[in-house]
Length: 138
Image 1 (cartoon, rainbow, N blue to C red):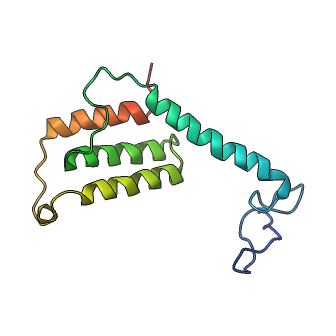
Image 2: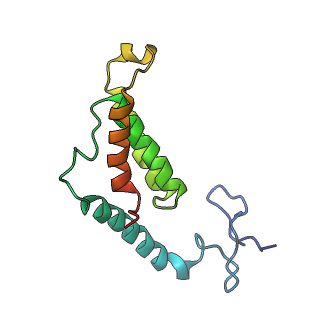
């Protein structure tokens, strides 16, 4: 069993995060941990950005949002990357929000019709997205 943080939330409720042994506060409330949190936040975003842009570009367009199959393929790759620990939940959530916006740009009448995707086209788009988001086996 672990001890809870002794601080209170902005809403005035007791914090429910686990306390650090040294201070009795969680990483969100411990002032000595603020600098580490700031470094973690900036380095994580830079690593993801650098990783995405370091990929090879000689194949089909790696990510396209021109049709529903492409958006679905990217969403599936994002989910896989998050589940494998390659994307934080926050990064995945932000990307999914952008995909939602992209999907809304399609004609509204198309939402009420069944989706008919070309499986080969979808799988190629999924392969391209996986190459950008998932570590290679090399």
